[in-house]
Amino acid sequence: MDDVAFARALHVFGVVLWIGGVGFVTTVLLPALRRLPDAGQAFGHFEAFEGRFGWQARVTTLLVGGSGFYMVHAWDLWDRFCQPAFWWMHAMVLIWLLFTVALFVAEPLVVHRMLAARAALRPGRTLALVHRLHWLLLALSLMTVLGAVAGSHGG
Ligand code: HEM
Image (tube, rainbow, N blue to C red):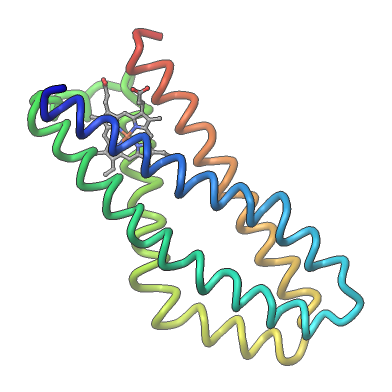
């Protein structure tokens, strides 16, 4: 296996762990927590689970970004970013940027505190808001995965 094939394997490995985790949180964990009778306690559980997944997401984001840019550099694919047909390349970078800013900047500096303060007053509504945001990120990520697989295999 050459180095770029290895980078692609690492890229897909990272995407599976990362987006798979977002899928689990969105379709299994949050619906289960929102059914608990005590919304305050449910929000506490969410923070504990998401805090743990946050570290996994940070590591996999770095892996996906590193391997992705390595492929772009090794194959000299920069001109794809000037062609609308390669919208899925833009989508990959956009999703990656969104999560990178969210996980490394917004969440630790602002969002965590903001959500905790809001949840102290309205825990049920805060969980509902968090759930909607997860659905949005998951939908955009899955569209990107579909576009990237179809696009990179000649679709
Ligand atoms: C900095 C961000 C990223 C860069 C620079 C990047 C770059 C790349 C490159 C160069 C390829 C190979 C394209 C080809 O073979 O023609 C690729 C494939 C792929 N990427 Fe990304 N990517 C990034 C982020 C993401 C993200 C966030 C996702 C998921 C949401 C993703 C999912 C995929 C998938 C599923 C493939 C197809 C793999 C295959 O079927 O072989 N990438 N990426």
